[in-house]
Amino acid sequence: MPVARDEKSELAYTIRKIEGNMSNFSAWHQRSKVISSLLDTGQLSKDAFLERGELVNETLERSEMKRPEFELARNAMYTDPNDQSVWMYHRWLVGLGERLNLVFCKGLMDSERQTGAGAGN
Image (cartoon, rainbow, N blue to C red):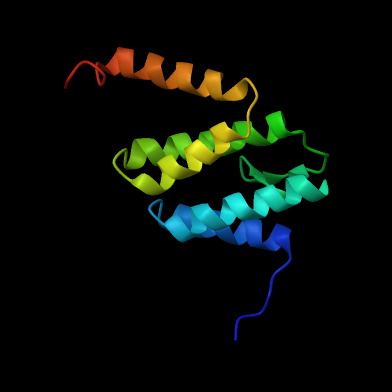
């Protein structure tokens, strides 16, 4: 029987699984559930996230939490744009609200314009 992990350990576990396989739907889904729980209980802090390989300790607001999560999703999208796992996670992130999702979408559209990816190529 598996041993239950605390939510911060579970968050670290999901990132390891996602980095090992960007198409791991279960890891993306679990990550959304853990983050939702941490947000709901007010326990989400930067020490729960790996930011550029370093742990930092400060309280996170929703908008601050979303930036590294959108980066993670964007990297997965570029790795395999046809994989549904990351797109479902992205949809969940967007559903958290706030302006940050518009920043991400604009960056993605700008990138597509530069590469010509959105022009039927």
